[in-house]
Image 1: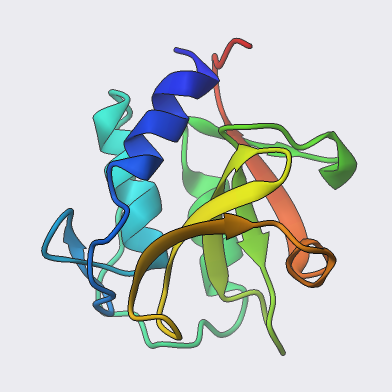
Image 2 (image 1 turned 135 degrees about the vertical axis):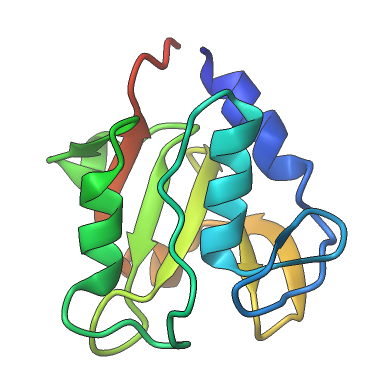
Length: 140
């Protein structure tokens, strides 16, 4: 599997309306839904969780990510690269996911804009990164 395949799968989600707990490209996705749909598109078998609130508590999001057998945690977030999954914090506990599409852009479903979008990974967004995950077996 290549990072290009992951980025292509993420970009296939662009324009999909934001829907809390959404899991259908073109119909509705939330940030976790984007990651689940990307994983499925690249042949991974993600553990999906439903029934979660809008703001994760008690390490819920990290716990789910850590149980994914096809993801590995990247210990040094400065080594992130295209195709990686970013865990972000706005306030409180980490609560948002994005796919890094290159060193300077991310794809994510963002409630504030009402859809899945791609934009620059500005210094403000980069400062929100608390963990980085990589699909096992990705080649450059």
